[in-house]
Length: 411
Ligand code: SAJ
Image (tube, rainbow, N blue to C red; front, side, top):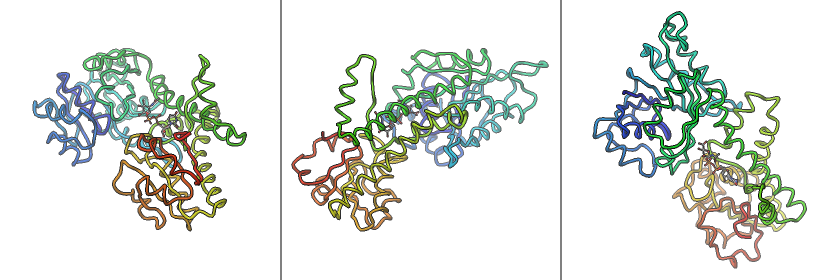
């Protein structure tokens, strides 16, 4: 069967590739001509282990190609961005324009599956956009009109492990109708070895958001404990270690805040859908966002207390052992420190990058340095990311310095 995947990003492209490998005839669609060209040349437009050679193979075999306009197909998978906006809601314009672009191609019997992380109700909204563009269609065959089968099927893969997790992970499939869910299941069965769990579309949308909110709320609990422990003079890491010996307790780890494009964003989609009820989820977001400001305050205090002129900031990535600086609390903390302490030099250490990102490179009092050099030059050392490289730092180098260890790596 012929399948169209809209959006050739971190999710859409690997999905297109594994479908093609499973024997489907797949066309990837993206507005970005460079991405389309790259895919047609069998070249990967971003880094992901094990994806490059499979992409090359399926393109060479003629099972996958790419274009900017969707052709007619039996199934459409929408994997376009749903960007987080200033007002903490999702921008659905890419989903809706994808819907408008495929609507004229539909004649009845096709599957349309949304995979993008979306607020509850988006799948229904996307279906309405299709029906508004092509009023000959229906979702249920009313008045004898041809039926399209619309479902929501969130991805839950971890970047860096996408090719494995895409095949192995269980998946939730939520249909606008039961028939739509059943048909979507048949499609995912072609490449997915995990369990395929059927439900309705809103429950599936909420499931994706719930998974990431669960993690956010639990990290907020740990971050709040870290503030309480600072006040009481208790070692929060030891406290959590001890409490976690209880068979039904599993507190996560505090840190400088929560980063990434999912956990710090998705809970807001629940909050905007039910603002009056989602008080805990909102508060957790605020606790986690507030942790970064708290760390800046502690460094500023240490600088004021010691008359320090140099601060070493270890780590810029959003979590350990990756080079991804987007939505990173560490990077935000370095930026805020530079602004708040204009007379101080901030030596940023990030072993996974060669040069500072533009927002930091433009600051007169921020430099990229190596760990040993930065620590030697600094009076105040703040550890922001638990990269393996920092674990082995010679403790004697820290003697006589004010150390703020936000990940408990050196305790
Ligand atoms: N963090 C803590 N303490 C912890 C665990 C994490 O402070 O105990 C911080 C990290 O340092 C980082 C942030 O949380 O700043 C997020 O990191 P993460 O490893 O928890 O998650 P992501 O954003 O890399 O990936 C998550 C995953 N979701 C869940 O584990 C429920 C992944 O499976 C999803 O596919 C992904 O979000 C997504 O795309 O939604």
